Length: 64
Length: 216
Length: 52
Image (cartoon, rainbow over all chains, first blue to last red):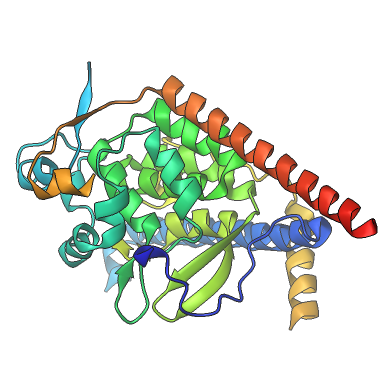
């Protein structure tokens, strides 16, 4: 089987449910980080929109 | 009787110019980069295991041969069975009903089948559908082996989904540039995503910092 | 299979429906469960033999 040659020793084990609590806890942390990232992206975008709005409202004089 | 060509000749020769496009408007024959395509059709796994295969046979191939995700691996940049079967899916062009079987019914039983279908959906579906198809699996924390040029590492289904949603390059393939989620929310194409953890506004900051503090 | 490809005879393969795909998934899953049961049984038998 040429395509399947495991020439290097494979130390990675992908067996699930070895320690279900720890696996869930690790997932929860990853999920929290994703939510945090999403929220920051939305805040960032709101800030940008506010800035655009602010510039639009400046008078010609202020813009110089 | 609807049939597929058993081999890829027509796919590569004709669909390059005139074949049906994927739902996202891309030509499936050119979604993977040329050097990668050439490595795939040259490799033994492709010749031996991806000939005369239909949507149901894909399941057998995944169960028997896909034990890690990845693009090309090792110094020889050998294309992974995962990548070869993704290329086969590009040729077969399965519909949403078949993809749902791979993702849900099949995906519960065979995690690498789910991973393959997720990757394929990201390559071929429109942005809105990519988010809707992929995000439910952010709650799947089963382990996945990933093999790249530098060796083997461990990842998780949710992390793989996240990579597909935010990264530019996954499994040896440059992903088409998809609008960010927040843009689609602004356009009312998508509702905000609700995490399986529910509304955790208050817990958020403290939890992440606490956990980071512990790990660091 | 490869020789067909080699002589340029490509032929066609029947398209599978979502139902076909589901049936295939079920069949493979059941086969794997059977194999697992057999493994447990042979292990059990081996232990029996060792005891004797």
